[in-house]
Length: 332
Ligand code: ASP
Image (cartoon, rainbow, N blue to C red; front, top):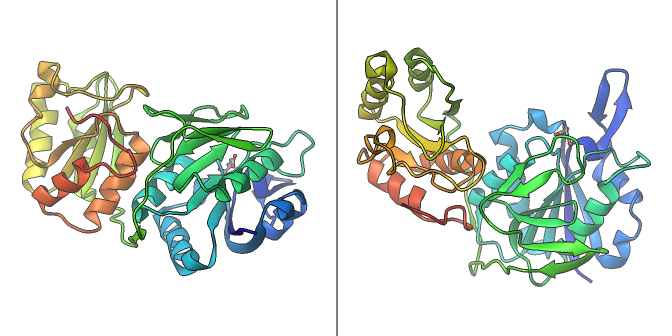
């Protein structure tokens, strides 16, 4: 029988109602009591890392999860991580860079309703997650939610209330689950041994452009951060109003060694800064990168991971444009 480690981190799935609203309070062992059928699938051991609403999950928690997987990697055939849904896509993206090429499934799941609710989706998601963690066909970081298996670098929470809360952006689902049986469409590849990293540079910010974004906001962020992600409009470009101050600010700070990751706020199909004059003028600066079809979650985690290793522009470019777990399909 397969051995699976259930890592508890909190979320709605583990929440109970308090006078102030839902709060995570159940341990992973308590979660398992609600789904006794899992004991017929595999032998489970539990590790409670923290019990947080995922609103409170931050990069040090991603490192803690990575360390737990690394410490126990050889003892188990697969891993299930129960997690709040709100930042689940960020954690999945981060783990995709921190644990690369794993030959075992590392499955994140959660739920929209607490496990004690009559109408909960927790039980289905947990059974499906364990089914995937026991699978011979799957490996690496993925999210299993509402019958879908989504690659860790491609997930996004796209519904705040519905059970089908996650979508796979610019990439097909890896598989689906019907009656708790896995249909695997894509078999992820893996390395002989996973590559673990435990260093992230947290000094990364994100600005969603609005019509009228002013240069002082950019300056404020760039003074404090080593890299900034700019979610632009459409396929991408930078406004030139205000005497082109935004452009000047970007160039001033990239000269100082800061990095920009240009992306789009449009969910599907990605950026292409080579189309419009407002975009092409950003090309050719080695400190300005383009995310193309990556999700913002993955672009953010990837630049944190890269800047945790190097600030050298050529190496930053090489690492950024080297696909990891199919995070980037188009590169111009
Ligand atoms: N606020 C919760 C969390 O992210 C939502 C959920 O788990 O569905 O922890």
